[in-house]
Amino acid sequence: MTPEVVVILGLSAVTLVLLLGAFFATTRQDRKPRASESSGESPLQQAETAPPPQPGMGHVGIDYPDPRTITVGDTIDCQGLRTRVLGAMYLSWQGNQWTEYLLDDGSGRYQWLSVETRSGLNPGDSPHLEVLLWTPVPTQGMIPAKTTLSVEGVEFFPVDRGTAAFRAEGVISMPERGLLDFADYRAADGRLLSFDRLQGQPWNSFHAQPLPPGSIKIEKKA
Image 1: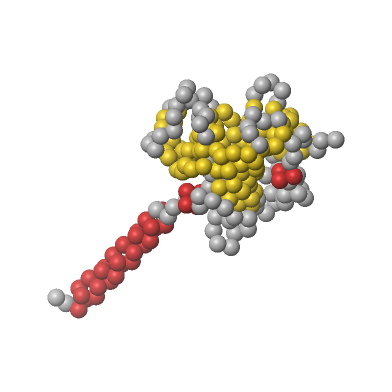
Image 2: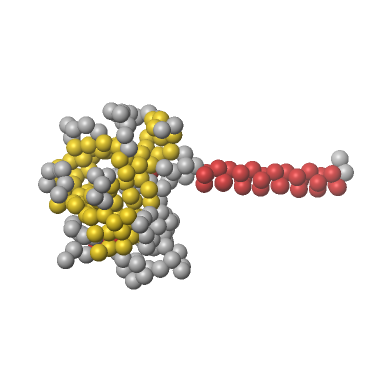
């Protein structure tokens, strides 16, 4: 074998090793668990995470109202729809705390608005607010199982389940304090389906929609 051939084969082997190393590094990165699946969050918080405000998007409490200041009795404009805050639930689970607000638009259609301060997805990222709008979904008595569920033609995969403690306030069909069972599912496109219930009661189900910063206007109660 000539020296030229040896050099060519050596370079080819080095190139192959580099390509394989890059491939396996990429594979490990893709398989890294999502923060929402490994942080022990409540299903009422598990959803496609709204991105933190970027430069030019404004600052909470300065350029747009801070959703954390919402109180029972306030009126808020959410996606162009005026709603009244009838009640609130203050929940905690495995060290996480967040608030759920019961909204009434006057038509008998109720929604929940959840607000939570979330840490950055990567080390060094600044904390940001995650605001989700929850809409009831009819599941015709479906019971959340530990397997994939199909709702309205969409496949949802189990993410987490557990029991959160809560304290209720305002006009709300919940006891003042109690425990809330939950089961959370996520679709491949990031959509979230969640079930919850008071212990011993039937299951309720909801879809979650993340709201962008500044999409809520708050009118404080007089």
